[in-house]
Length: 241
Image (spheres, one colour):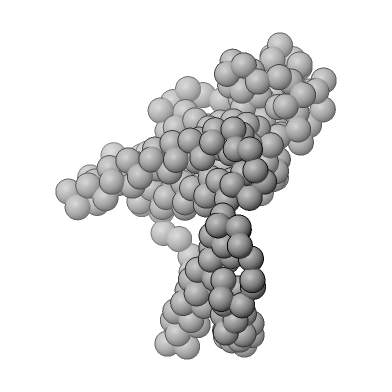
């Protein structure tokens, strides 16, 4: 069966994820929650009654592997379910990869590009491993502050893995990514909010003795500084265009 749209690919992605997660030992109730479907649907997926299997081509397998790992981490950490946007993005990647492989056969990658892809893939594995370790530690943590901090670090690592995975996809397929110039007024508004938030350091102004709680407040201050810097550069690029 030929599938040529992300929406038609969704049941296949869910079915493949369900089977993978069942093989990893997760319960149907856990999988149904993370995939936003009923336990009965998981049973149908496992029996092949619902949702055909995605091709085991290397490119598709790598994409599904990454989402399976992310799903497993979220189940273990009792984190939020996969969103429809994430599933659609995976479906889009699979469809893009399928057509993108032919492009790579016609246009060999130069050495620098190949080296960059290797580095990114190694970083992807490290981020996924770090997320897993942090979630394992969070599950064993005895206090809420430490549990929260470790889950936060795990969430960051998962987000980093998403970014790296997407950049690898773009580089390997050679697909041009359209860049839409952000609205300058909206960027300036966000920048003003971030600048206002950044004026008051929570770590310096909030009086709290707990060491891990201080680290959590410090992480917010660090994020505010990062947001202001990133939005500022985005606004600067928007003005040049």
